[in-house]
Length: 234
Image 1: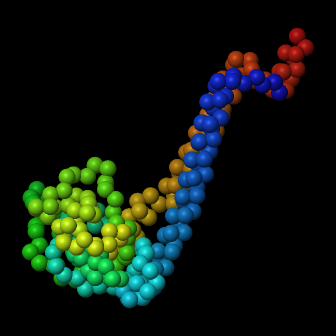
Image 2: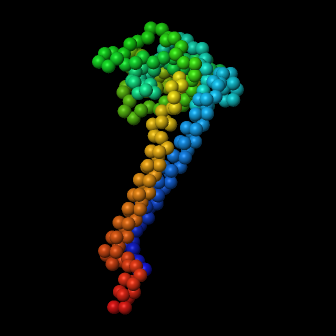
Image 3: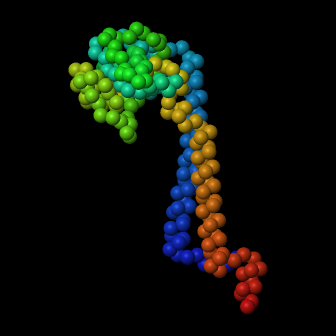
């Protein structure tokens, strides 16, 4: 084989090829991680609900299934969607948990298409006895501006919500949500989708390598077998 690579082209091609391979490996690893998380969450769903005291004793963490603590006081209405995809207002109240108040979702006001959403004058009745501890939601990329005067929150601004509730010690690491199925971050992109991404990145790496080789072959810088020997004997 005879190969004389273009220096500048090769200097660009090697990092690009490495990036494509790394992305393929990363997506394959993400598929394995997500499959393990789904299996672990399925075990939690089948297990009895943990009491708040036992959760606090073991340390408050994400995704633990529990019975909700008692709550009361002002309501916070945060725009979102149920697991079924229906949009509306998630109704939260602060509950004393593990020595600090934490937001617990106590209801859901489904958005009336073509009209304004309703405002609950009082806490809704209990609607679930199975809850999970979830990380405090991050601000969406295209979130609307919050309107605290109307109690309409489009993203969970931790300092502003703590001020609105007059709870400066509010635990803004977690929220407690009703168990409606697998968490969104697990079902939004299932393991099969990550495998598809991985195959795509590896396919792009192979195509990139083939194009790189064909470019050098057409320029006479890459020859194989007897082609290189014939050229040398001329």
